[in-house]
Amino acid sequence: MPRKKGDGKGQMGGGRKKGTPNKITKEKRDLISAFIDGHWNEFMEAYSQIADPEKKCRIFLDLLPYATPKLASVEYKDKTPTKTFRDELDEISGEKSRG
Image (tube, rainbow, N blue to C red; front, side, top):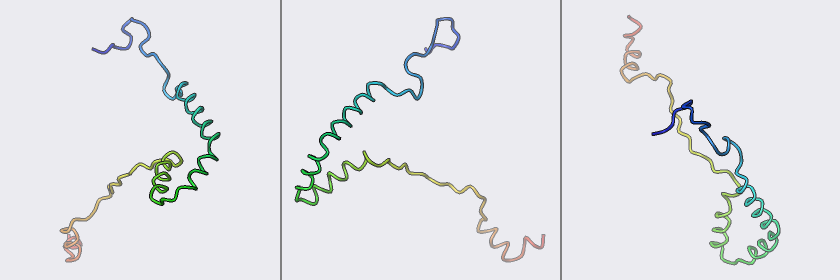
């Protein structure tokens, strides 16, 4: 059973506050970034020597998500009222205008 706020047993939440970056994750990202920066020329030389276009394209596509943000799909639902087929017929026949 979860604790209730103000139960007299002390502070409830521990750990990082929301939005605080993880220190270890940042250190790892910095190390990976330094490695990539130090070996970029070697990578580009090896990449330029790949003859198979399919393999070259696969490498390019595999790296793409790290350089561009992924877009989330968005669903749009139109909430404006629409006329029913019956409304359209009534309007055409003039029934609504007669009252």
